[in-house]
Amino acid sequence: MDVGGHRRAAEDPAPRRRAALGLLCAANFMVILDSQIILLALPSIDRDLGFAGGGAQWVLSAYLLGFGGLLLLGGRIADLAGRRRAFLGGTVLFLASSLLCGLAWTGGALVAARVAQGVSAALMAPSALAIVTATFPAGPARNRAIAVWGSVGGFGATAALLVGGPLTDVLGWRSIFFLNIPVALALLALGPVALRESRGAARAYDPVGALTVTLAVSAAVYGVVRAPEEGWTSVRTAAAFAVASVAGAVFMWVESRSAEPLVPLRTFRSRGLTGGNLVTAAAAATVFGTSLGVSEYAQGVLGYSPLEFGFASAVLPVMAVAGSFAAQAALRPVSVRPVAVVGLAVMAAGCLLLGRVTADGGYATGLLPGLALLGFGLGASAVAGSVAALSGATDGDAGLASGINTAAFQLGGALGVAVASTVVLSRTHGTTPEALTAGFRASFHTTAGIALVGAIVVAVLLTAPSRRRIPEPGKVKVH
Image (cartoon, rainbow, N blue to C red; front, top):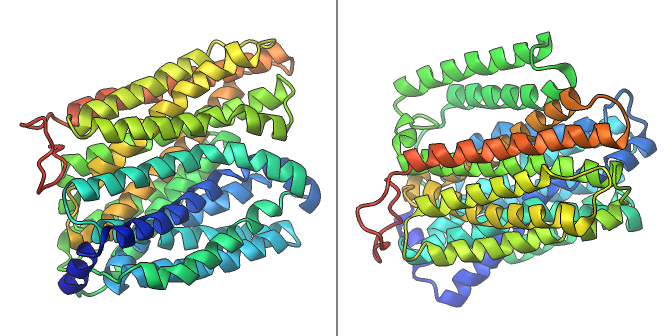
């Protein structure tokens, strides 16, 4: 590792470190926002570009394929080639691909640009989080920085519903991509000044490991995002999961025998990393699956316009911020486990409240209470998951650990959307408001179950620390 560079970064004055954190969190917000902001714009995109047979869904899926499929590779590239270099390179691609998305002249051009946008995010997100861990010294300062990062991710995941509707209604769907351009320009202008370079120890690349893990994750993402439309037992879905399984097995075999593996298998022996990523995945699956149902219920049953729904859903990101601050405060006197368990349990309670909506329900008694609890629990869970997953990462593997954590968020979100969509399709019998509502209620009960199962697993996996107080010079104890 570039020890000298890391030490200088850790000894930077607090204002410089805060500026770096703000810059990196802005990048994280845009990356997470871009994965979901497209949801409310899909009908407009479909009308303008003429997708056939539901093909507009590929505008969302293409980003998930590029993002999720390359996250682990992007994290390791950041460790080996330099995290600031990887971050700025990804930002350049993010700028160019966002411009191409906004100027897309055909559906195929937009899908191709979205794949490139996902690849850029796969470089930006893990390298940015790795820079955070390199910028702040181990202990409370780093834990607080990671907590802020997690809270921004939770806010970005919910703000897409708030931002996407008004932008699409007022300025058109192309504006959601042009929004990225000034942010990317600011990142490129300020990044070289605010961020220091850091990297892991010099080592050889692992091309076979990179190829197999990318194939495994990409095939898994493809299977998950296509399953609701084609069926979980269809030939194409089964083939995708079979490819993912074989590629994953080959990857594990190669990594166990490689002198310099892309992903050292010892990484997964940490209960903190595994448990933290389960928190992250469960929270993402719950909020993305629920948000999709809430959006369709509000617009398809209650008759909200995208603009009206954007304002109605504002409580979700606001409460996510409140939940993240509460989690940051709670992490000082207690361990990660109770914060994570309570966060997921609160999300489950919010989903159960949403599971009581009716075809003629109102906002104050129907949507508001459930959305408020869902947002608060998401904020707390995102913070706890990030801290648990990253607090034990070595400086040399920070990019890899960051990539795994971001991959857990994206894969969890994709799985949540797929499961919730499947439940809605299977439990909706007719096109009346009552029939549609029955399908949405079933999906909310399902996402509540995901959150509860996640809380139980995490309670077992993240064993209690021997001391309740987080040690000042060390890291958060999660195992």
